[in-house]
Amino acid sequence: MNEVIKYRTPGGEDTLLLTVREAYLRLRISKWKLYDLIGKRQLDRVKIGRRTFLPVGSVEAYVRKIWQQESFA
View: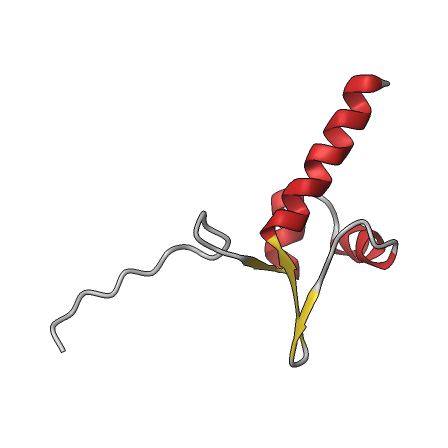
């Protein structure tokens, strides 16, 4: 019972899934824009029960994709 339990901050480097709020804050976009990107299938989502999560890899892949589009434009 004397074990020390360390908790990382939500959305930290060891997190596989982001909440909707964590994702739109990380991307610095509105919640509605995030839902728009999910609806257009530009971002993947995972439903667990009633909650919606976004895989960190999906968010990172989206940023790389738009970064490459900007650099070639």
